[in-house]
Length: 388
Image (cartoon, rainbow, N blue to C red; front, top):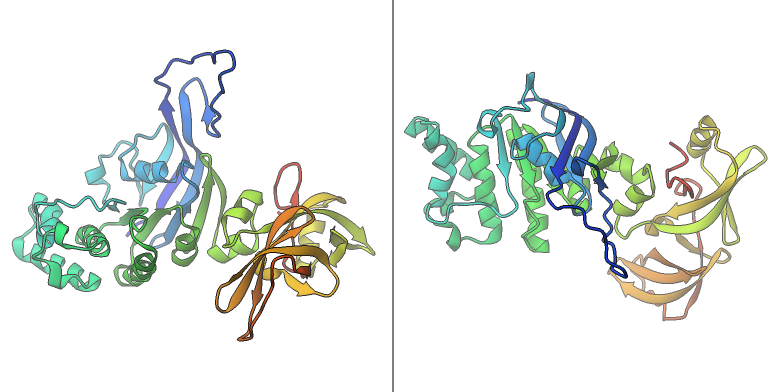
């Protein structure tokens, strides 16, 4: 077991192509990644301390640098600058095989000509571990993952979920200090992903090691991680527990990325009334909760136009509020998802059915409101949450 420290980690991919001037009328390709004289900066200023036996999830959209960061930890990518510590050892220049880590890849990476048993035992054979010890470790891992009955089969005879279990088993037998997983569930269908998520949670409780898990799926991040690291364009946007980043998003990007359906936004105004902060949007004025008052006052936030964020399940129907018109109504069983137009914006409202029939035909006019404890106010200039 080991703690992991990533200190000012940076990854730059050299620019191999010569810069070309765009021809007249030619569209210039835009990229959100920083391009310097050295090349394209894929990861920068990455600072993270991972405690021993902690489960950390790196999450973000494609191209944000999360897999590159994981591959630097694994030793599969060179570190351009910064320090990587595993335990008390600086491992920047240590070979992958000597880092005491094990990695599970997105595409399983199993040897097709070997049986499940041989795949799981292969790394131990290379280390010349005793045959009896190999057999013991392989069978223990197979039992944990419920794949004992498949040990004599080859990968082509297994389903996607079974292959992923074998890939995980191959990593378990090595008993690594750090367990790396690079989007291991992305090739599975939705039902199997849910099952495998539960399996990984159980696995974590049984083998009790340090996990670094990469995904673009925020549901995986929220359900698996002790803490989650949200990335965008090579930068860390926020680090916190799943509940912290859901309840207190640091900026508009985090607010929109975490939560399904994503947060709704309104043009609003933050002002002071009788010494209290209130937020107004489309004719509705709500006093913010005490904890929000304290944080805004601590930051000495001035009255200003803001972007007001409210999650779909925090909007409620009322008699007199933000006026909206139903475009689409989706019955989801225990709730109805209303896609409405409110002041020219597309807004989603989750309305619990409570076992009753709920009907909202297209064109139905509704009024929306929200509580002061669930309103998020973001700066129009910086897009940062004004509470932090």
